[in-house]
Image (cartoon, rainbow, N blue to C red):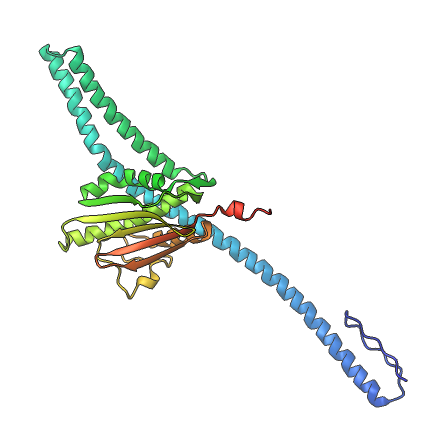
Length: 310
């Protein structure tokens, strides 16, 4: 009777047989086992190489995304500086007039303590306004990526404070409508960057419509509401909407409908990446009768608590 052994390590089959046919089968089988073992070793090597390639690609992609976020923030900085220039023009004029009046009244000998205090109050209020603008600007550019809870109404309000003068200068009315008071979780400065991108895109679309005299007044409405266990933020404008043929491409990196001088094509890509990859939410765009509407949906459940073992 023949004897044989076979293990999970695919050891060769050992036969003790007088049959030449069985010995031939055993030899062929052992050759197949040897070939399979070689293939398994090659497969293991390929898997290790693939893991290393995937790891390198992930690191490369993360580095690229960090670079794109930096580029987006640099572009945003330029827009904000322009907005601050608009925002400071009026208070600087008021301060200039107040100090000129103080000088004139002093030279005429009619400056009394009451008038002086009134003028200094005007100067102080406008300086405080300018200081608040700097605080908003500094908070927006703060590189700290601290995860935590935040009030989106406050965050959006700070971004609007930065853009408000520029929007008014371009005849664009912005309105923040808080239908529900909600708390979001994530990196607040990154959320502000998303809102800034959406508002800047809305502003640019509206300005084009105003230049073409298609509309006489620009409007941007920001809604904050709650739907079941999700926080919903909508940024809607009357800027004419997005061409349906490219609507599916607007979140692609380096895709832009603006001229090369005015757009990098990374803003909406960064916004979507922040909302979906970093805040586990979603960002979608659709057309309305008057323009476009971008909808952010983010779970109201704290992801850190959700992952805790109870």
